[in-house]
Length: 110
Image 1: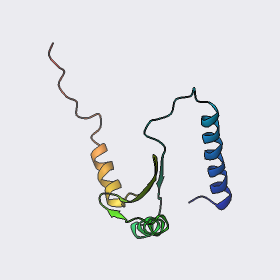
Image 2: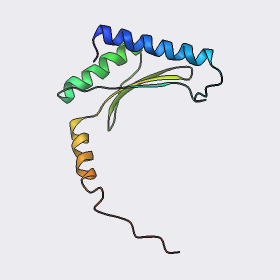
Image 3: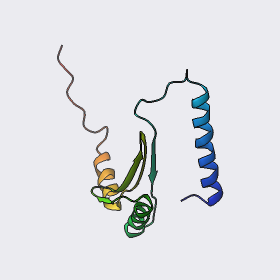
Image 4: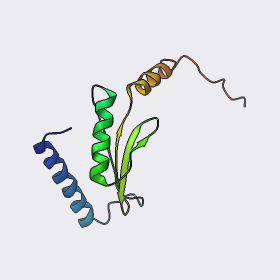
């Protein structure tokens, strides 16, 4: 997690960006709103899960324990999501990715 100074700078930067977009209606934005994602990087799964659970309490939402541990809330079309990817899932992804480039589909016949 960022230090208080880095967190404050990040929030100030987001406000500046939103002010810019508000002042420049010619700049397109997504009709689906804003999506902020926060990936928790902890040394062990218990610590990562604890960060998500603590954040969920602050957000007033439930934690979802699926493939990833997640919590999310929305304010209108603005969404915030915090998640931790368990190390077993990271290992599974690495194993699956190890086949990348080794297996190619047959070319389509014309």
